[in-house]
Image 1 (cartoon, rainbow, N blue to C red):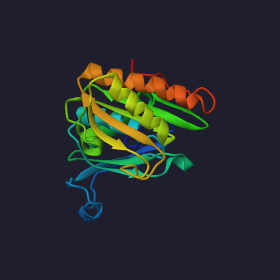
Image 2 (image 1 turned 90 degrees about the vertical axis):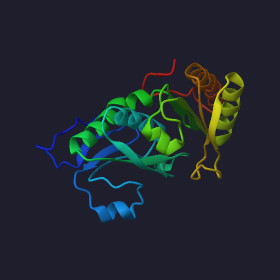
Image 3 (image 1 turned 90 degrees about the horizontal axis):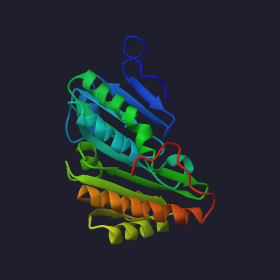
Length: 238
C-alpha cells in the first residue's frame, strides 16, 4: 500500500492508493458546484472525496462504510463500472461529501485501512471468483449503494460465473432465515456482468450463517473449474 501523504508534501487531492483492487482515494477541498450538478449527485457539498477502483466493489463499499461511520461525512453517490481489467464483474466509484477537508480525508484513510480486511473473503482462480461480505451494522455507504437498512446486519453473496452465484444464493436462503434485499443476474441489475449476486439482511447470526454456507458451496463449485480458489488476505467472516 502507498503511504498516506499530507497536504504539506503533495497536492491535497491525493489521499492514498492500494494495489488491492487498483484503488485510489482523492479529495477535492473546494469542488466546483457546476461539476457536482453535472455529476448528478443528490446533495452538494463544499468538499468531496472519491474512492475509485478497477476490481472489487464490495470490499471498497464495506471499507467506506467504516469511513463514514467514523467521520462527519456522507456518501452521496455510488456508480458501478463494467471493468475489472477484463474480468467478469464490476469496479465502482464512491463519492462522499463533507464540509471539512480533514473529515473527508479521514474517511478515505479509514477506507484504505480496512480494504485488505474486506478483501479477505474474495477468492479466485483462473476460471472466476467468489466474494462474500458481511457487517453486523450497515451504514450510509451500503444504504446508498445497495439498499441496506442502516444499523442492521447485511451480507453480499457474489460469484462469477453467474451460475455459481445463483446456487450460492439458493444455499444461503435455505440455510438461515434472512430477508432478500436484491438479486442480480447478468442482464438484470448486473451492469451487465457475468455475476450472480444476492444481498440479504436480518438477524446478525442468521446473516453470517447464510454467508458462510454460501461460501462453502461457492468455493466447492469454483474449484471444479480449476485450481482451489484462494484469497490474498485472511478471511474475516468466521
